Length: 590
Image 1 (cartoon, rainbow, N blue to C red):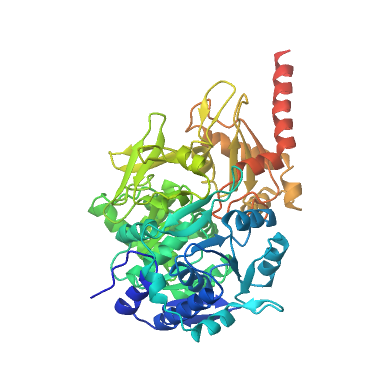
Image 2 (cartoon, rainbow, N blue to C red; image 1 turned 60 degrees about the horizontal axis):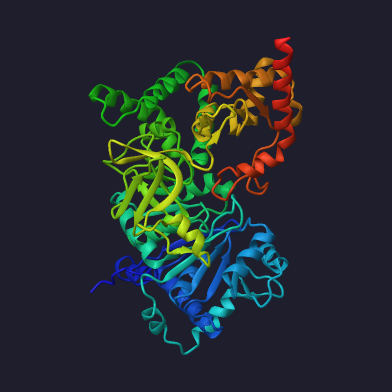
C-alpha cells in the first residue's frame, strides 16, 4: 500500500515508491553539475538525522540552515523535520544583528552553513553554545558529511522519531524579513505545507518532468513548490546563481520554473531591445506579433488564433528557445505581475500562472491555472481556502493554510488571526466575477495625501515600469500636497537613448543630473499619469543613479521594496523636492 503523505518527510517514502530515479536532485557548484538519485538522497537524509540525534537534536529542537539553494539544503531540511525538530531558514543576505536576533529568539542549537563566508557571519553574530556545520570544507569547522558519517554507524531507530511527529506539529519557523520592525517567527506545521502542495498540484499539467529552481529556498514560496515537485515526481535542478540562469536554463531545458515578476520584466526588456534593433521586414513582423500578443485573450476567435500561430512560428518560437524550448508553465509570485506582461507571455506560448500568498499562509491562497485564468488577478482560491473582503477592502482568509501563530508572540498572533479564524493579510483587494482575487495594494503601503485622498502606490509603479527606460520606481507622498516618485533609470536603455539624442553619457551619477534626461523621464511619467485620477498623479520625480538591491538593503529577498529604508536614504532629496515645489508655487503667485 502506497505511503499517504500527511507530514512533509512522507515525501521521501512517496518518492522511493512512486518515482525512484537517478536524477532526483541536481545542483551546480563551482561550475560543475552534481546529481543525487532518490535512494542516495534518502540515505543521506537518514544518516544526517541519526548524526543529529547523536548530537542531542530531537522533537522541538531548533536547527537553522543558512545557504543558497543546493542539494544539502534539502538534505538538512528533511533530516531535521523527520525528527520533529523545527527547521529555521536564514537568508544568506541577512545582516549580523538580524542573524543574532533570530538565533536567540528561536533558541537555535545547531546551524548548517554553506561556506566560509557564511560561517564567519554566524561566528560574528556572537551567539554562544551553537554547534556549526558547513557544507563546503572550511578550515577549523566541522563538516556536515562528518556528522552524517557518524550517523551511518549509529544504532538509532528513526521510525520511532517519525512516528512521534503529527501533522499539526511545527515543521518550520520562518522569520519574516522585518521591513516593518523586528522579524517575527512564523510557525508553519507539516499539515500547513502538505495541504498547500496537495491543493496546488492543479497548476502542473501532465508530463512535467524537469524543473529549474533559482528563487531562495529560505522563502516559503520556493520551498513549498519544491515539495510540490517532489510530490509530483518532477526532477529538480538548482541554478548556480542569478548570473548563470541563462546558461543553466539552456542546459536543463526545464518544463517549469517559478519566478518573481522582476525577472520576467528583464527577459521582456531584453527581447524588446533586440526587436527594436531589427530592420525592414523582420522589424515589421516582430512588432506585428507583439501587437497581437498585447491583445491576447483565450476566448478570441479562429482568425486571431490563426494569426497567432503564424506569430509563434516566426517570432515567439525564439522566445521559447531562449527559455530552453520545453517550458510548459511558469509560476509567478512574490509581487504583482503586470497584466500586459502576462498576456504577452501567454501569447508567446509561455503560460504564466500568477498566484498570491504570504509566509503566514504557507504560502498559497489563490492561483491561476489552466481553465481558470483571468489576467490582472491572482486566480481563484485553492481548494479548502476561504477568502473574504472586509468592509475596508482588506483581504481576509481562513483554512488549512493559516499558520499556527507567531513564535512566542501570542498578542501579535491575536492581532493577525481574529476570533473566527480569519487571517488579516494587510492587502487590499476585490473578487472579480465572485471568484478571481485581484490585489490592489498593500494596506500598509497606501498613503493619504495632505488633501485627504488615498493613493495606492503599487498600481502606479507597475504602470510606470512598463517603460523600457524605467528600471525601478517608488511612489511616495504621505501627508504631502501631491505624490512624487523616486525613479531608477534602466541605464543600458538610457545609454542607447542618449546616443540617439547626441547626449554625452559619462556616468550614471552625471546623467541623472542632465536636464534633457530629466525632461524625458517627466514626459514618460506624465503620459502614464493620464490613466489615473488627478489626486493620484505623480507631479515631480527624482532620478537616482544607483539600482536598489538586496545587498544595499533597499530590497527584501523576494525583491519587494523596503519603503522605509528607501525613504530614509533619500530623505534630504525628498525634502528639497517638496520645498522647491512650495517656493516655485509661491513665486508664481506673486
